[in-house]
Amino acid sequence: MATDRSAQVTWHGSLMDGGGRIDSVGSGAFGPLDVTWASRTEEPAGRTSPEELIAAAHAACFSMALAHALTGAGHAPESIQTTAAITFEAGRGVLGSHLLVSARVPGLTEEQFEAFADDAKKNCPISQALTGIPITIEAELA
Image 1 (spheres, rainbow, N blue to C red):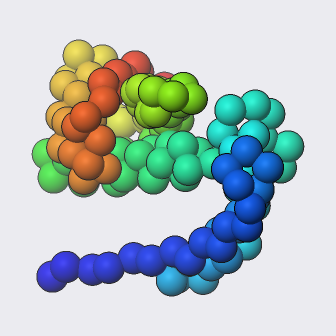
Image 2: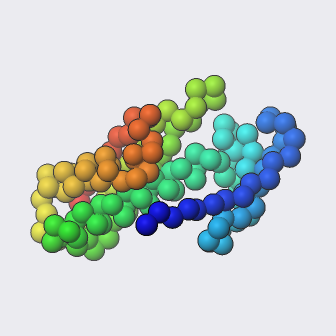
């Protein structure tokens, strides 16, 4: 079953001098959030950026895919902590995503865990949506 998710954004002014707001998301889970060009390329100053939202989506999706794969193999994780760092360069766009994951998974060796993490990196839907950029990973058992 396919699902659709939505977000509404309002932008005022030019790219450099203007600003926008993520007014709402369909679920109501967050918003409003301010967004500006400066929040993409300089200090965020309490505002977000599209890349920060991609990072959140990537970290969440990866964690879900990893939990699913581990549980399916009989190794339910106690916890998974994932950080995704999206690199953006003005004029070039999104250049990559780096995942840093640490998890508590009883009964797994470091090598086994790294294999599960690499598989989740390749197969989570957000990773698949980001196939045009390099995705790197560092994975360790806590």
